[in-house]
Image 1 (cartoon, helix red, strand yellow):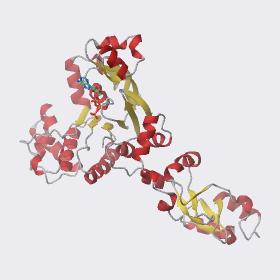
Image 2 (tube, rainbow, N blue to C red; image 1 turned 45 degrees about the horizontal axis):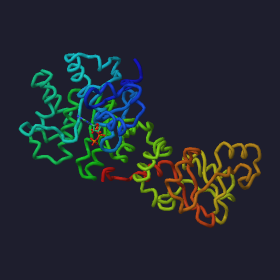
Image 3 (cartoon, rainbow, N blue to C red; image 1 turned 180 degrees about the vertical axis):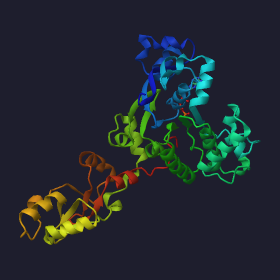
Image 4 (cartoon, rainbow, N blue to C red; image 1 turned 60 degrees about the vertical axis):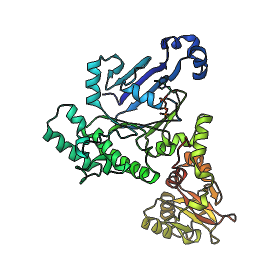
Length: 402
Ligand SMILES: Nc1ncnc2c1ncn2[C@@H]1O[C@H](COP(=O)(O)OP(=O)(O)OP(=O)(O)O)[C@@H](O)[C@H]1O
């Protein structure tokens, strides 16, 4: 079976009269605006090509009107693409007749919407079981399954309440439970958390990450919140005017924005402008003074379960890094060595306390190891790891439409 579960090829969606004419050569290369001016047609999607792997958490991100919802709806043909193919589990959904399509949707997908879409007159349990009822599953069986998924999303004990008794976050859990009840292979989530207040939103995001660790579904998640995209996604496609302008892992998007639009996104979304290395550094578990000698260094490192350590001189100035292998070699070849020889101290770059965190991304991309932070006199103050950068560079909770 192909690793790609979803393959979207050359998909266009054009709204308006005689939309196919937009696909002719004269128009194809024009921008969305120009096409609209010349033809009156609105380009929803422009030549989308994406491959989504089985089990991948895939984010569609962009501003309002960029085409995220249109793309999501094309995938299950709530909207028909104007051209192109969408192959899911080896089957081209654009070629399915209505019956095939309805069956395929029911079997394969679960959907979670922004506005929960719960039935107010049904209990939490009945809401969660609704999809199974539509499928014709017996009452006993669907209740058992609904109870199970409600427990999975943390709603045990709430089965016989009505949606109006629940907070927004809890209602969205019911929405997720309902989508999961069917045990779908693919979950489509259209801005599911954007109606929630920031704290609840964060909690729901954390829970979804945990849930996905356990369930390993393929998830396609629409958002206009960059922080959300970076936090949840294995990969992110950024859309603008119906086109994918960048696709990549969160790290790739942040470290190498490929377009001024993405750069602006990243800049706006990052409070790293004010976060400096000094404000987030941490103490290393092994800091070794150069006079301490190779054997002490090895003991300290083994206690801390580290293969390398930062070395400072008596004034605590940062000298570089040593690794276990080099130290062992020294100890084995010359038993009289009292201090760590300068030759095995690898000079590594350090950053100053006021280095802006965002600027350290490229440094990490090149080095992939902890970096020493020093004060203006070169004194060692602590270290920065890629985890610290990643945790701190994106605590943005805002909404790009604000
Ligand atoms: N039924 C329709 N008729 C005409 N144009 C449409 C229709 N639906 C969407 N569009 C246009 O397609 C483009 C993409 O819209 P879409 O709703 O997919 O964007 P979006 O990124 O999901 O935005 P939002 O975050 O506001 O939901 C927009 O220019 C929109 O005006």
